[in-house]
Length: 449
Image (tube, rainbow, N blue to C red; front, side, top):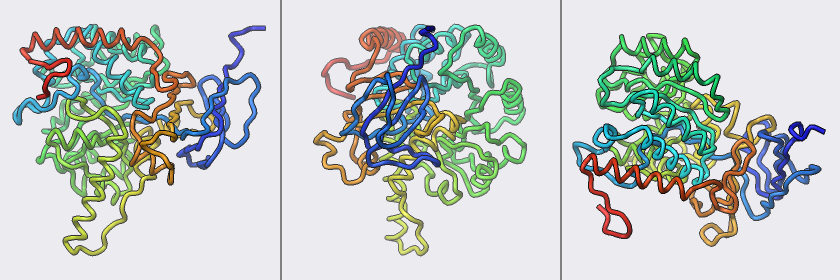
């Protein structure tokens, strides 16, 4: 008998299952059957011969979180904070000193941190693509981390070139056939649209669409940016193959353009507010029936988990409506529910980055990207509403197991793989880059900045 042909089965048994699907309901108690890399069945009292049994009787089983926008290469300077009001992000100061091996170390530790936070998919907007050696180094980090990724090829903001590096992107796509990376898809990250550069935008969009790659672009990041997205729509640039990031400064014409085109939207609420972009436009998006995904963006300024992003988003929306109420306004919209925000963190995020048919919900035929959250810890017990518990009460301490494409990458709260080795690489890279940039970092238990 050919052992390679034998399917590997895992039965996650007895958990509260939040499928977040359109065809499969949530269950107060049910099982999830995984065969190889896919979910094959969800329901009570499933049977599966020769399956590994994972006990989830005191746990919530749900799809893994989808991080729709992260700059993983910036992970070397996590939690560093704002340098100054003139230089809130240290990317330019540090990025020019990165070598390809530094980009590898930073990306690897960033993606491993995402896995430990229950994130199974990351759209990595990798604007450290100085040359092809950096591309190969970062893609190797994606493969070594073991989660599902979108590698968004983007040139550094400080680079001399004005747009996407066509030569490097073509090489990436063409060499991908000889170096299969089944969990990584490719995308293009043109320069932000503020201010617009019509000629360069047309070149970048044409390249991406010729190669069949999704386009991830920062939009609405400046006060002067209103109307830019609507102009893109009028020029035929906006479509279902585009993900717009941040959208902090948009007007009704922009919103109508997004809704009409079917473009995805990614919000990174914690980083947007901490980095000076302003409050995420969640109520404006809701008013136009646009369902965004959530992202971390930059761990220098924001927490690296989606729990924090969910709480930031729902808090902003609630505060906005309560302010309207205090001002005596009539016709106030409904408060966002915890069910809404959990969907933004999972299935809406998957759709926003073009993976809605692949991941984001636990339904037969979809990839088995699964998160198991413990409900027996004092920080969350007793459970009164499972979805409310995930959104308002849980954090990374509740993570028990994480599966990506049916493979366990976290078990019993412990990351599989060589986390100590990744930490060593990241520390060495951080020390070298900080020294080259003249940046003073505080290690150990010293006083923070």
